[in-house]
Image 1 (cartoon, rainbow over the protein chains, first blue to last red):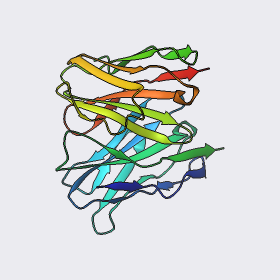
Image 2: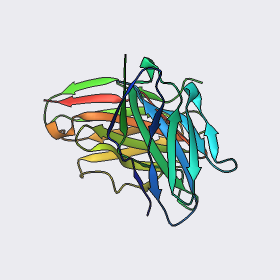
Image 3: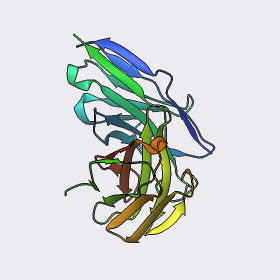
Image 4: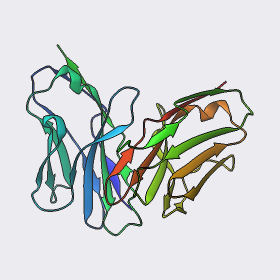
Length: 115
Length: 111
């Protein structure tokens, strides 16, 4: 079985400041990793994904994440946030041997960008 | 591509009534997922299908919930009878390889 831990339920940050949203996972097999964003009253939208290759992956809206196998982490970063980045962010994991494309989601981190 | 389509977007019903939520996945996707999202419980996977076949329904809360996928382009989630605690946002997602693509959700309110 696999699990995802998002250590921070809420992260307040000022506009133009950098931000890091933390994600740790637990799995006995190799995994694929994802970050999704959910804006108010909308569905989840894929931000970025790690399948293989370079451990630093870039996504939409200037976000990037780094896969660290030894730390079992996949933290999301942005060097300078904007008000429009205010949303909930979900980390998710899928194991390579699992049936279908089932994802296990974390509990989410609410990013609040303030002026 | 139109993305995942869900209907209705909002549903208000009275306790005891039957509710049917509908989903049209992205064309060519072979996996379909139903989720429920509430403030208290977060995002929960209810059931998922591969090639129209239900694979895992362990997340379906009770026998009042049922889901079908009669063909590759349509799925329904039915609640009968509905209860106030079923109030939530229900999402449908589809996938062809690794990532899932979510619909806009149906906000269900049971009074």
